[in-house]
Length: 500
Image (cartoon, rainbow, N blue to C red; front, top):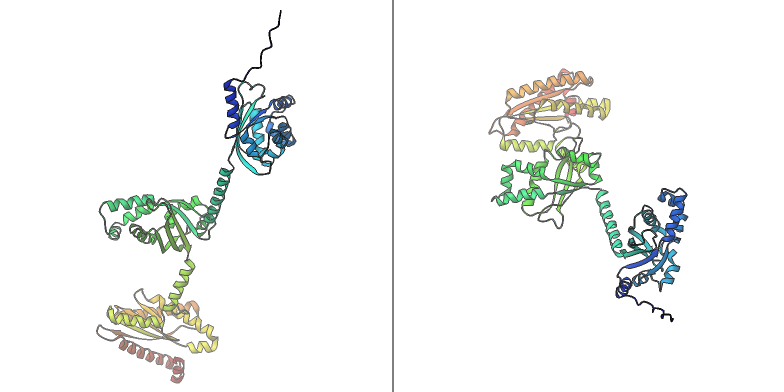
């Protein structure tokens, strides 16, 4: 009996050839590995009582290396060799310690934990290295192949190179962090706001046929208020919190009714008119209020951000604190019209007021001229500091007896004048009497030296010259001064020197 010829080796089936070609020519890196040694290691650890694999591995990093050593690389495709810069599988296998290192270990712990917990598919973003040391950001997708779930003898790993994508993402993150840093730590108050609802309201008014928007908002101030209520604040920076005295953003956003009030509506009206006219970049001075209630003068710059010119959905508002500058300007303006010592109006303002009253009235105008008695004596005996103190007391007294329509001015060293529009002789007499009462109270409070005025007054009717009334009041004041010094036993010559 003859033995049949041994069967010829089986030729690979067409589908097997196709699978091999697909593996070899796949556009992503493919690795076929044997994890059965790792499974045996896990079984030994379980027998030793290990329950938390992550804690077990992190307690001794050498255990991670032991896990890796139990994994056997069987095959890789052409794309893998190209990606990692290896000539062949042997070179790649000999240099796996250069491929898997450094910051990929944390991700590797999670991959091992997935297998420990019974999952047959694992992966995610991680890091590998080429043989020449270049970092590769990759996405790993690993799968225990069907039929090998019990032994882990065949595990297929697909690696997608996302280095460029990650580099772009990191660059974008750096750019975003830089932009955020510029915004958050700018020395200027910055607000990102959404004006889209305001845009819709403005468009509705335009569609209703309104052409004169300024007249419309003047007649309908409630429209301006509604627009203010429709502004949505997206974000503010740290300088904004400091400027308005808010502990955090939430507190500030809850308190916007405190910040934007009073004068702000008029400023916002002008802002709306500019927007109506297509002016999407604006600059103006405005007034806000800190949460403490203090006035904050700001230089406002408003800009609709590029790409939102049609919907106004993103607007950048910058506020520069100009409170100190405005106070300085107000003080300089005050000094231009006031005497710095007594806080009364100065001679320049007094002259302008004379001219204004002569043009417009109201008539009659009563003029009161006053001379501070004894100033030279005080200066001689107590020095100029004593004289200045008496002048300040004079300013206090005169300020208390006039109303807002009147003018009290220091027009010389010890000379003062009051302009009382719409006041006749009787009104002038009443004011002089009130002044005597105020002076008496002032002396009771301060004591020595005594505050005392020589007073003369005159009333000017419509059609007369105020200069003539001033001259008459001046003469009456000199007569009063002469009587004062004569009653005090002083000679006229000394009086003239003091007046000079």
